[in-house]
Image (cartoon, rainbow, N blue to C red; front, side, top):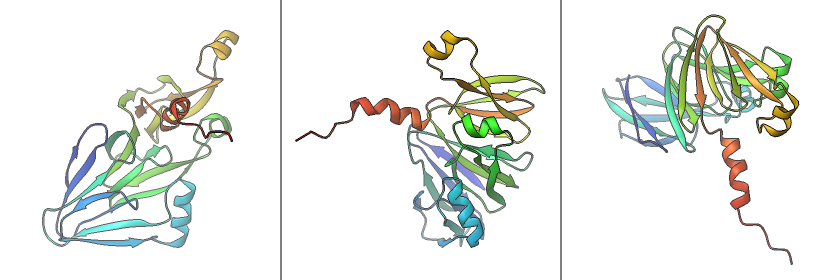
Length: 226
């Protein structure tokens, strides 16, 4: 499968499929496609559909199948950010909820649960995340810019809650309390930070969507009182 990501702030990924090849995506994410691409909407099984709703996704998926070699289909970003390709063949990827955009048919989208109680309660994403496994390429949506880091075994990085977009399954995720009362009350980082420990690759995002929404609230018009 050949692909190219087009654009910057609101990008699309354009995919050239081989004849008979299938790619699936979230409903409403298709931007354009050739006439030789067949589209079919399915839950892929009721239980799988219900699990996807727990991940912040829709119950249905849309499958696109090429009837000729090189047929094109493009998928667009839902909000300002970037589209990141990830190869899940060597290592499963754990993503934030609503990160999934589209993937080859050999990639499985499933539930992932926080392994630690503190991370589930205070980690910002809750106990349920997305897991991409199997074989092939998937595309995920990142809020703002994307920073990639490769953590060595035992190497740790502390990340502001919400800035963790995805990480390889070998990476351990935990929550750590911010040290120092002045840091807690006046540092502006909250009470907890996310701790990621290698080995493995991580993807960080510079502008979590919830932070963007929070920063826009003061500029939104307020209803006038009568």
